[in-house]
Length: 170
Ligand SMILES: [Ca+2]
Ligand SMILES: [Ca+2]
Image (cartoon, rainbow, N blue to C red; front, side, top):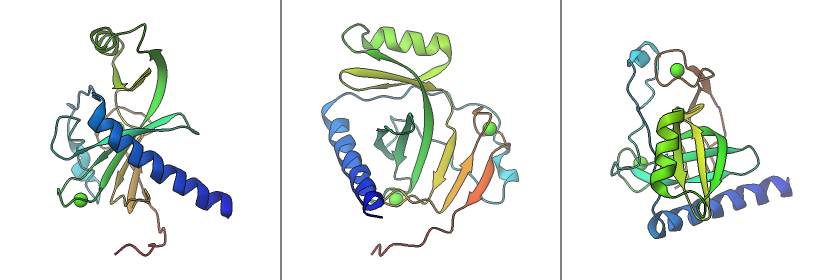
């Protein structure tokens, strides 16, 4: 249990660090979010990912244990995170050997998203594996969808309703 608590502390710390990095380092996500939005067929609509240049963008972080990258948003701009998407890391490059233009070119060619940090550049699947709506600062999700096909929001996402106990937020 202690381990679990430490883990969430670590994750929170990472989130804070990610926020700083976002301010200090140029961090960008290339993403194509076209596709059809048949997501309305789902009972709860999955928000379309706004992208890194949207005012709701709140940075990203590596989920080191699982090889995933999560990207955070505050969709209603109330100062609290409420949306997160998670992508699988496919490959990495060092910023020393690959500059931003090269990385973007690689990502476009291979159909990937790219996340810049120093000294590592991460390439992920273009589309998320998980969509999490109602994320709190401890990263619990009210509604989480998994998109096994990782093909963007097109209606084949499966909803998981996590009855995660609400921790004393507020
Ligand atoms: Ca919010
Ligand atoms: Ca999909």
